[in-house]
Length: 208
Image (tube, rainbow, N blue to C red; front, side, top):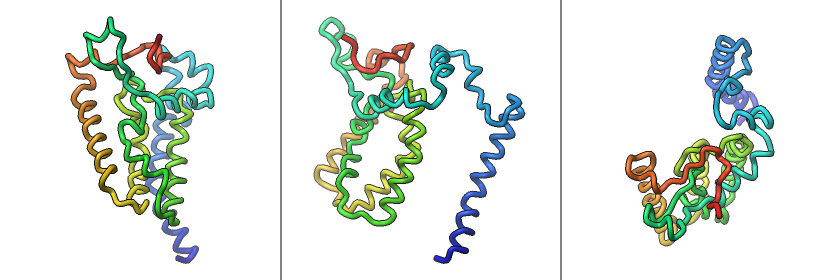
Protein backbone atom coordinates (compact mmCIF):
# COMPACT_ATOMS: atom_id res chain seq x y z
CA UNK A 1 0.00 0.00 0.00
CA UNK A 2 1.30 3.47 -0.91
CA UNK A 3 1.70 6.16 1.73
CA UNK A 4 -0.91 8.32 0.00
CA UNK A 5 -3.48 5.56 0.13
CA UNK A 6 -2.56 4.79 3.74
CA UNK A 7 -3.00 8.42 4.83
CA UNK A 8 -6.30 8.69 2.97
CA UNK A 9 -7.63 5.49 4.55
CA UNK A 10 -6.51 6.60 8.00
CA UNK A 11 -8.19 9.99 7.64
CA UNK A 12 -11.44 8.42 6.44
CA UNK A 13 -11.33 6.04 9.39
CA UNK A 14 -10.66 8.91 11.82
CA UNK A 15 -13.38 11.25 10.53
CA UNK A 16 -16.35 9.76 12.42
CA UNK A 17 -14.22 9.48 15.57
CA UNK A 18 -13.21 13.13 15.26
CA UNK A 19 -16.85 14.09 14.75
CA UNK A 20 -17.89 12.29 17.95
CA UNK A 21 -15.03 13.92 19.90
CA UNK A 22 -16.00 17.35 18.57
CA UNK A 23 -19.64 16.77 19.52
CA UNK A 24 -18.59 15.66 23.02
CA UNK A 25 -16.43 18.76 23.50
CA UNK A 26 -19.30 20.97 22.36
CA UNK A 27 -21.66 19.16 24.74
CA UNK A 28 -19.26 19.67 27.66
CA UNK A 29 -18.92 23.35 26.80
CA UNK A 30 -22.70 23.75 26.66
CA UNK A 31 -23.22 22.00 30.02
CA UNK A 32 -20.26 23.16 32.09
CA UNK A 33 -18.65 26.05 30.24
CA UNK A 34 -15.50 23.99 29.64
CA UNK A 35 -15.04 21.59 26.70
CA UNK A 36 -12.80 19.32 28.80
CA UNK A 37 -15.09 19.12 31.85
CA UNK A 38 -17.09 15.87 31.86
CA UNK A 39 -18.94 16.57 35.10
CA UNK A 40 -17.35 14.09 37.51
CA UNK A 41 -16.36 16.84 39.93
CA UNK A 42 -20.04 17.65 40.42
CA UNK A 43 -20.99 14.12 41.47
CA UNK A 44 -22.20 13.69 45.03
CA UNK A 45 -20.86 10.19 45.73
CA UNK A 46 -19.02 8.43 48.55
CA UNK A 47 -15.75 8.27 46.61
CA UNK A 48 -15.79 11.91 45.54
CA UNK A 49 -12.94 12.72 47.95
CA UNK A 50 -10.59 10.24 46.31
CA UNK A 51 -11.34 11.74 42.90
CA UNK A 52 -10.50 15.20 44.26
CA UNK A 53 -7.30 13.85 45.86
CA UNK A 54 -5.96 11.58 43.13
CA UNK A 55 -7.93 12.56 40.03
CA UNK A 56 -9.90 10.27 37.74
CA UNK A 57 -6.77 8.51 36.44
CA UNK A 58 -3.71 7.83 38.56
CA UNK A 59 -1.12 5.16 39.35
CA UNK A 60 -2.70 5.07 42.81
CA UNK A 61 -5.59 3.02 41.41
CA UNK A 62 -3.47 0.50 39.47
CA UNK A 63 -2.87 -2.09 42.26
CA UNK A 64 -6.56 -2.26 43.10
CA UNK A 65 -7.61 -2.64 39.47
CA UNK A 66 -5.00 -5.34 38.88
CA UNK A 67 -6.18 -7.08 42.02
CA UNK A 68 -9.69 -7.29 40.61
CA UNK A 69 -8.64 -8.36 37.12
CA UNK A 70 -6.12 -11.01 38.20
CA UNK A 71 -7.04 -12.24 41.67
CA UNK A 72 -10.66 -11.59 42.63
CA UNK A 73 -12.37 -14.95 43.13
CA UNK A 74 -15.58 -16.12 44.80
CA UNK A 75 -15.04 -16.76 48.47
CA UNK A 76 -16.45 -19.39 50.80
CA UNK A 77 -18.25 -17.82 53.76
CA UNK A 78 -17.40 -18.63 57.35
CA UNK A 79 -19.41 -21.47 58.91
CA UNK A 80 -21.66 -19.00 60.71
CA UNK A 81 -22.53 -17.36 57.39
CA UNK A 82 -22.75 -20.46 55.21
CA UNK A 83 -26.52 -20.79 55.52
CA UNK A 84 -27.15 -17.65 53.46
CA UNK A 85 -25.25 -18.77 50.34
CA UNK A 86 -22.57 -21.41 49.59
CA UNK A 87 -20.25 -18.73 48.18
CA UNK A 88 -20.10 -14.96 47.68
CA UNK A 89 -18.90 -12.75 44.86
CA UNK A 90 -17.46 -9.34 45.61
CA UNK A 91 -19.29 -6.59 43.75
CA UNK A 92 -15.92 -5.39 42.41
CA UNK A 93 -16.24 -8.33 40.02
CA UNK A 94 -14.49 -11.61 39.31
CA UNK A 95 -11.04 -12.05 37.82
CA UNK A 96 -11.00 -11.93 34.04
CA UNK A 97 -9.32 -15.35 33.68
CA UNK A 98 -11.98 -16.88 35.98
CA UNK A 99 -14.91 -15.71 33.87
CA UNK A 100 -13.11 -16.28 30.54
CA UNK A 101 -10.35 -18.91 31.03
CA UNK A 102 -9.94 -19.23 27.27
CA UNK A 103 -7.73 -16.13 27.51
CA UNK A 104 -4.97 -18.39 28.93
CA UNK A 105 -4.36 -19.51 25.34
CA UNK A 106 -3.22 -15.98 24.54
CA UNK A 107 -0.06 -16.60 26.59
CA UNK A 108 1.46 -19.10 24.14
CA UNK A 109 0.33 -18.43 20.56
CA UNK A 110 1.67 -20.72 17.86
CA UNK A 111 1.75 -17.93 15.30
CA UNK A 112 2.90 -14.32 15.75
CA UNK A 113 2.09 -12.38 12.62
CA UNK A 114 1.97 -8.63 12.00
CA UNK A 115 -1.75 -8.48 12.90
CA UNK A 116 -0.88 -10.29 16.14
CA UNK A 117 1.36 -7.48 17.35
CA UNK A 118 -1.00 -4.80 16.07
CA UNK A 119 -3.85 -6.33 18.05
CA UNK A 120 -1.77 -6.52 21.25
CA UNK A 121 -0.81 -2.86 20.88
CA UNK A 122 -4.51 -2.03 20.42
CA UNK A 123 -5.44 -4.03 23.53
CA UNK A 124 -2.78 -2.22 25.56
CA UNK A 125 -3.84 1.24 24.40
CA UNK A 126 -7.51 0.54 25.14
CA UNK A 127 -6.90 -1.25 28.47
CA UNK A 128 -4.40 1.15 30.03
CA UNK A 129 -6.85 3.99 30.80
CA UNK A 130 -9.17 1.65 32.70
CA UNK A 131 -6.22 0.21 34.67
CA UNK A 132 -5.45 3.69 36.00
CA UNK A 133 -9.13 4.65 36.41
CA UNK A 134 -10.56 5.45 39.85
CA UNK A 135 -13.33 2.85 39.53
CA UNK A 136 -12.87 -0.91 39.21
CA UNK A 137 -16.23 -1.18 37.49
CA UNK A 138 -18.09 -1.69 40.77
CA UNK A 139 -20.90 -2.95 40.90
CA UNK A 140 -20.39 -5.87 38.48
CA UNK A 141 -20.24 -9.66 38.10
CA UNK A 142 -17.16 -9.83 35.88
CA UNK A 143 -14.66 -7.15 34.93
CA UNK A 144 -16.91 -5.12 32.64
CA UNK A 145 -14.26 -2.72 31.36
CA UNK A 146 -12.70 -5.66 29.51
CA UNK A 147 -15.62 -5.41 27.08
CA UNK A 148 -13.79 -2.42 25.60
CA UNK A 149 -11.04 -4.66 24.24
CA UNK A 150 -12.43 -8.22 24.43
CA UNK A 151 -13.11 -8.26 20.69
CA UNK A 152 -9.38 -7.80 20.06
CA UNK A 153 -8.53 -10.59 22.51
CA UNK A 154 -10.85 -12.96 20.68
CA UNK A 155 -9.26 -11.92 17.40
CA UNK A 156 -5.89 -12.83 18.94
CA UNK A 157 -7.27 -16.23 19.89
CA UNK A 158 -8.38 -16.76 16.31
CA UNK A 159 -4.92 -15.80 15.00
CA UNK A 160 -3.02 -17.81 17.60
CA UNK A 161 -2.99 -21.02 15.59
CA UNK A 162 -4.33 -23.30 18.33
CA UNK A 163 -6.86 -26.01 17.63
CA UNK A 164 -9.74 -24.75 19.70
CA UNK A 165 -10.94 -28.05 21.06
CA UNK A 166 -10.24 -30.42 23.95
CA UNK A 167 -9.30 -28.44 27.07
CA UNK A 168 -10.14 -25.18 25.28
CA UNK A 169 -13.68 -26.44 24.69
CA UNK A 170 -13.96 -27.34 28.38
CA UNK A 171 -12.87 -23.83 29.33
CA UNK A 172 -15.38 -22.36 26.88
CA UNK A 173 -18.17 -24.38 28.50
CA UNK A 174 -16.97 -23.17 31.91
CA UNK A 175 -17.14 -19.54 30.73
CA UNK A 176 -20.67 -20.04 29.44
CA UNK A 177 -21.75 -21.67 32.70
CA UNK A 178 -20.20 -19.09 35.06
CA UNK A 179 -21.45 -16.13 33.05
CA UNK A 180 -24.90 -17.70 32.74
CA UNK A 181 -24.99 -17.80 36.53
CA UNK A 182 -23.99 -14.13 36.57
CA UNK A 183 -26.69 -13.22 34.09
CA UNK A 184 -29.28 -15.10 36.14
CA UNK A 185 -28.26 -13.94 39.61
CA UNK A 186 -26.86 -10.42 39.26
CA UNK A 187 -29.26 -7.85 40.64
CA UNK A 188 -32.06 -10.41 40.87
CA UNK A 189 -34.34 -10.44 43.95
CA UNK A 190 -33.62 -13.42 46.16
CA UNK A 191 -30.00 -13.78 44.96
CA UNK A 192 -28.47 -10.92 46.96
CA UNK A 193 -26.85 -13.36 49.41
CA UNK A 194 -24.44 -14.42 46.65
CA UNK A 195 -22.98 -10.92 46.42
CA UNK A 196 -20.86 -8.93 48.84
CA UNK A 197 -21.40 -5.20 48.42
CA UNK A 198 -19.20 -2.81 50.40
CA UNK A 199 -20.40 0.76 49.94
CA UNK A 200 -16.95 2.18 50.75
CA UNK A 201 -15.43 0.14 47.87
CA UNK A 202 -12.41 -0.51 50.11
CA UNK A 203 -12.90 -4.25 50.62
CA UNK A 204 -11.79 -6.26 47.60
CA UNK A 205 -10.72 -9.57 49.10
CA UNK A 206 -12.52 -11.54 51.79
CA UNK A 207 -12.13 -9.77 55.13
CA UNK A 208 -10.86 -11.69 58.18
